[in-house]
Image (cartoon, rainbow, N blue to C red; front, side):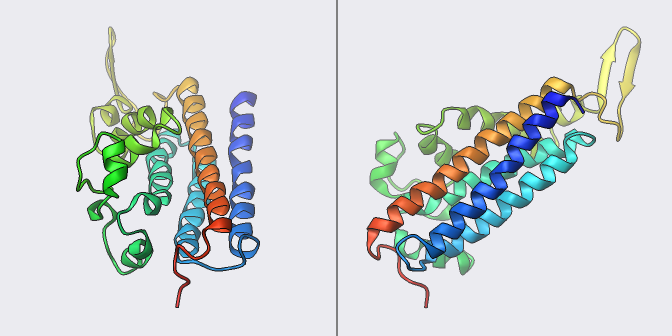
Length: 219
């Protein structure tokens, strides 16, 4: 592993502590209350840290597996923001905890219209990307780039088969067709997602401190 890649992974892993500190402050220091969203955020924070750790372990020697985790990390970022975009914000978390599928939940109609979406739009990943890209334009390119990495696709085949003047060559379990540049791009994209995730938790803390009970306290 190059020194540059090692340094980037170190920067990525620093977000683990940031996420823990933000969540801890949310449940103990902000407004002094526990809301439904805190339960939702707990699951998102736990998942984000697990993905960061798994990605960091895999990237040096198993980059193909690591890169597939980026889309999952993005999914966590998108969905941690979903409650604020829902039509019924008060019931969102309890609906999800009760088994509701997020992509079938209605987006708030005004938010949909403000983002050139139709009234009645759902909280699909694509619609969440369309809303959140105004806060970070790279979200859309990351979404488009890594969707293929969680499906068996042409991109999957390209990492196992290469054809040149010498014929067809296979790489099965060796990761030799993943370049150092691709590894660097992958970790930088993970850093971007992690930074936006931390910012989302920070924005919730600011909102929570002033909302005075907009979200119901869990029973």
